[in-house]
Image (cartoon, rainbow, N blue to C red):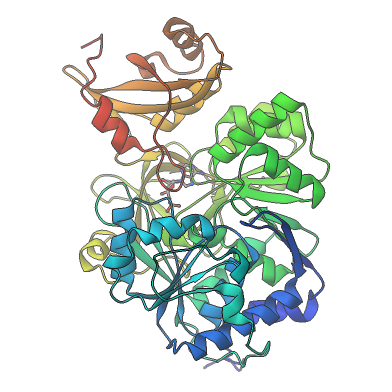
Length: 544
Ligand code: AMP
């Protein structure tokens, strides 16, 4: 027997319609790429999104057409989100930090028809435009006064594109499984792979993100997403804030500690989201200036493991509740979030931090299993570690027009292989030990590069640390620690080894330490281990 409930399709346009109707006067503030602060509200954002939707119709954009953005977090980018997906086209957010060859590949692979680009990234596209035969034109996210001289063909400023249009648009209704947006993963090997979200997956994921045990986004919050809108839709923020009716603050191109802190204070931000490297920059600024936060209470960290020293500094020095989260582009992205359960609040501080260092617990809507090398399921006892597989309504079922990659990504039961190695405990807390390809296999035992890196950055003289496995004649692989020291710190190999000796098991201790000026990062801010392996893979260990 079927239930007797309305079958109303879930749609992205319904999110902004709701925000405009009931939170129309709630502010959206942007530090624009041009410089000044821009201030309006959900009501005006909706009106301008409708103007853009009308403009897209005039340009002849068809349902399913891919329209790309190369843009910072700004109010104009937000309008693109809603106008493009809401009118039935597909928003393709491109990470501008990718290598030019990768951008060339994904624009053509996605078959993008128009590209919306921020002023900062016009030079990137000028070098590539000749290789984009199918792109019809470029919309620069600015007004005519700021439109630069450019070799890009068929260019128009965003403001002049939408100016003549009416601020009403009849958002179409369609199957909720219709594609809404596309984001390519910036893998370090092979071509980037496209993850194609739907209206249904996006709206259901937003409900999850707003739940109090997930990120708890509400109408009382002022949210500043540092995580870019080109990195998995700013972890869903562009949608969940509309669902909740939160105030939104966009940092534009300025992501340094001083600029962020200024916005946190002037706009009374309550919750912010970003990767660990951003928070390292912010904490360094706070330490240098002795500043405090007056309204910031929640900070979401993910994308890479958050070291204990960072969590402790944020919580104890600044009174912030750190939510450590884990997810992937393929998962929209949320899989686990680190909100402690009631029974955990009374635990001794050390035990609470042990839980906070884990990547969070499984949210409703995501199922997880861990398996060994033969695919056998392992227990969720917090000890057994294996590869993490997931399934759920906001997890990809295959890569966009990439059969080979899709075939390799799922097990025989249709679960998605994350490529992460982890433990899961009885409360659902997941602890990521490593990427499967980064874990160090030493004499039949595994050493977590993440744990070693976290231990190393706990040393006051270490700015950043990376650990890779290097060939060893006896043990197969042994850890090599590569360190960027803090400015002015007199850090020696012996002092750091001594420090680590008190933090990790003896057989985990790195066989050598190398000091470098900079560590390489991927376009989404993760340590680029492939580059380090290229450079240091043949390092001669003193123990070999
Ligand atoms: P991306 O698709 O770029 O968001 O990358 C997803 C990958 O980032 C995951 O498969 C993990 O390897 C890594 N990752 C994300 N969040 C965390 C975290 N909190 N701790 C450790 N690794 C993480």
